[in-house]
Image (cartoon, rainbow, N blue to C red; front, side, top):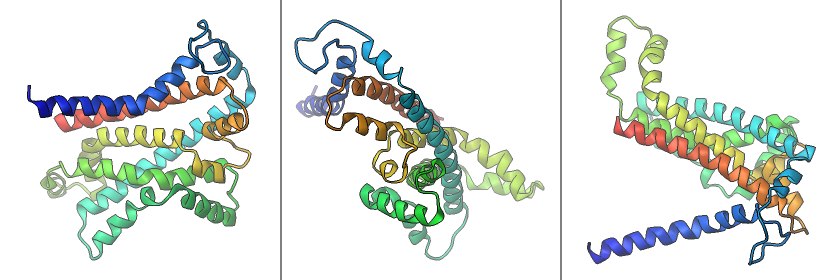
Length: 259
């Protein structure tokens, strides 16, 4: 094996350790009996999980996050698909500007996005409501869904849809019989990924959530001025949920690419 290959593998391993070691440490301490994260560890316990999930506000926050994630993911997937299909099917002036605007939200600093959403949703009377959080997270998630759907559509033979038209199918029939079945893996992948983005998002939700707290907002409130092992327990559940969604999305993308 060449030295460059060895160094590349060491670099990738070090990168993964840098990213995941703090999270794995938090998971380990969530089962530690000691209140403070110190070494050596105490004995194994599930006390912090039992304490955290015996609190009604924790279940309320998880319910809010689940509702927001599902609704925002569904809307983001629909908007992302429509945007990607428009790019795939039609040629028009200023198409580059259209794509730039569609992919703009992830490039905006989250604090600025949160302030803008707070002002805009306040004018609509939706600030501090679950629909307001859904709208904010949809704006953030739609570009990710659009990118995934766009990659899939670029793999489709443009003549397939035209052939359906020539055989007498209406545009909507061709869409439902040809385009959508071809993009189903991408649609599911986009839904999972945007749901994970919404479930984890904190800054924008903190600005617009009001009393309808999501899990990340609730974690900050527990953490302020207090070292509480319940944070490790709640964070572990959030991490496992998000990773499951991301891994599922990635598996669908890889399966789609192989096909």
